[in-house]
Image (cartoon, rainbow, N blue to C red; front, side, top):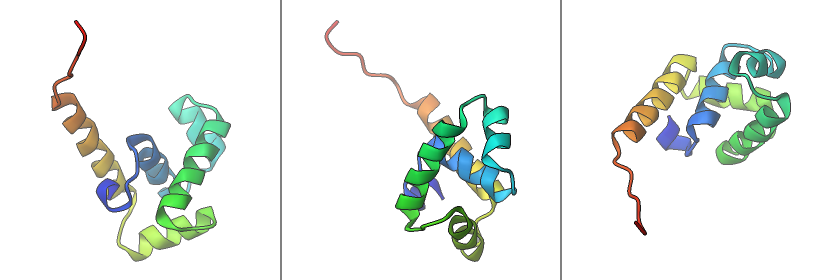
Length: 92
């Protein structure tokens, strides 16, 4: 899913939360971020998937068989891959 639409881990996490029917204010409180941050992320998600509204996002993901579980799994897989990637420090 993350690979399909090119979502960042934060965008995938937001999309997964939106698929559960939560509102941005609820998600912001849960994630410990500002609603304005989530609005920015949502704007990028909509642009990446070619949707105009949040309801379009839910419809597109649902019709593609993508639910909150698959989004969360994609985000988790990406995070695990990042943990396994060695950091490259130059200029030392």
